[in-house]
Image 1 (cartoon, rainbow, N blue to C red):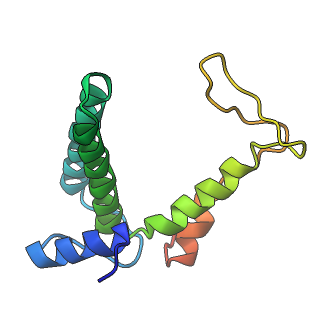
Image 2 (cartoon, rainbow, N blue to C red; image 1 turned 90 degrees about the vertical axis):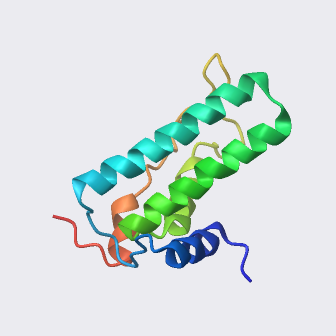
Length: 132
């Protein structure tokens, strides 16, 4: 059995009768709102335990966020692994040729002069999305 989050979530969705599309598509507004609510609920749980712990609870809540995010992508027919790969490609351009990065005061890595924005639309088009 695969341990890929995308494969695991697809297996769950199919087992319990949830939507599992294979081509990127818009979904009905009530379903989209429901998926957004699920994500917000999970993110709030992460925010709560990230300060108070314990670590095993934080790990659980982080995994729940990822699981629900992959489920939301699946409901929309989005290959999230491919989108993450494009975001990663873009993020790596934040590292300058000299290996240095610009940081905000709180440590967040900023976009430098060599930054290339992700082209998520192109990734979705390769998955069969016909954007308007």
